[in-house]
Amino acid sequence: MIPPIPILEDYGLSPLNGFLPSELPLQVLPGCYYAKWENIIANLQGLLLSKRLRDMVDELPILSTAFLDSEVEWRRAYSILAFIAHSYIWGGDVPAERLPLPLSIPFLEISEHLEVPPVATYAAVCLWNFKPLFPNEHIDNLENLSTLTTFTGSLDESWFYLVSVAIEARGAPIIPLLLDATAAARIDDRITVVRCLRGFAERIDELTSLLQRMYENCDPHVFYHRIRPFLAGSKNMAEAGLPNGVIYEDGSGHEQYRQYSGGSNAQSALLQYFDIMLGIEHRPTGERRPSASPAEEGTAPPPRHNFIQDMRSYMPGPHRRFLEHVTNVANLRDYVEAHRFDRSLCVAYDACLGMLRHFRDKHVQMVSRYIIIKSRESRSSRRSISPRAAPQPLNLASAMSKVSPTGRSKELRGTGGTALIPFLKQARDETGEPAIDAWARRLLSNGPADGKTFARLGKVDEHADGELEIVGLAGTWSMDESEGGICHW
Image (cartoon, rainbow, N blue to C red; front, side, top):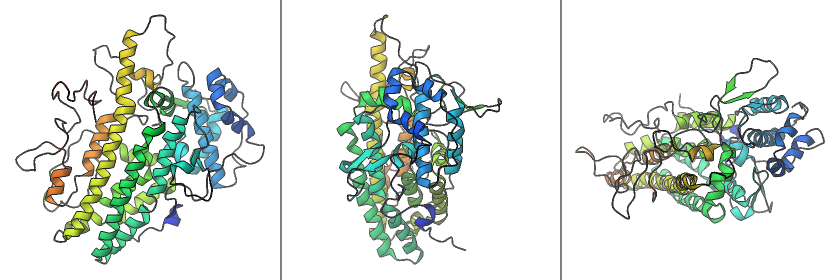
């Protein structure tokens, strides 16, 4: 029996807001019971600056979650406790490896209710952390958005979150559009499939334009040194001061360390939805594409264990189940593969891959500017810093500025804990792999050329693993394989 096309409302989604909540996030929890939580959030920057936040949290009473009546209240509680938890962990000179009972007990209960980990996920800082400035205007307009909570109180941090919120809102109409294309493919309605695919490609171009607006109000120095350290999780963070992870106290006396990834855009269900519907396969980082037999071509293999798959466990439960449902109904890649004779269909599908790859390419450029270059600047300044300079807090930014005993710079990791540049470049390059048309395969290919494939048209001297060779005095060169070049694009 063919699985039915999913109904958005069954998963808490809407054609207007997509994965953003249909009911706007609460700006404050009602009543007086949770006022102590809200008071900390209202004074978060001052408490971090004065280094009094941990004392305040330690003195909190253990509040019950029984008075959270609606889903919007549960989401608000989750978001503010996520900000408090990460402030507690990363808000001192050294990270705290234990979360006290007044914070950990309600945080664990709320996380279980919402089916998300007890950490500052993408949902906590983006999906459930915004408000419109003008309720009568749509939230896909950056000029109509404001954040509810930030760690730093800076415009840069608000803008960083709000660009993602606007992308989610602008991309929401794509969700039913691709479901319509899937339904049309089932009845061999090629005209509708082509129309939907063209609409997808056009909307992705708009998302890319929104992504590039990040540069307008988010300064790379502020992001790297002030914002990013607070977003780090507790997984693969030994060099940042959490070799074992974090203990969430529960009063049993037998707690064990937990390790979670921090907030990451890979936790956006919207981008994973695009990949699923277009049949794009993402492999574990560093694994090359296997050679496919003719019978296998056109069908995306079942997902395997990798970082992108792992990030689904950080999504709200209904979003995760929606992706599982659409995985069982996605048919567009197979349909286009079976209708290679239809030029307009193939061009429309390949255009979708091209626009999505272009989006990811712009994201790689952004990561280079905001993280790679800033990391190198930090190492350079560290070498020349005065011996009497004040010690820096131990966190993700300061850890990445150090040089290993071998003389090599440390491998940069994202807040999610994965090797940063290799992961992003591989995800970008895999986006173009399902291309149908021969010219599109050549244009979107980024792998090494051989006698059986088209010559590669990727960036000059960029290897499949992301490493860049020296290409001349004004060219691009690399310091190590995890970071791309100093002029990297």
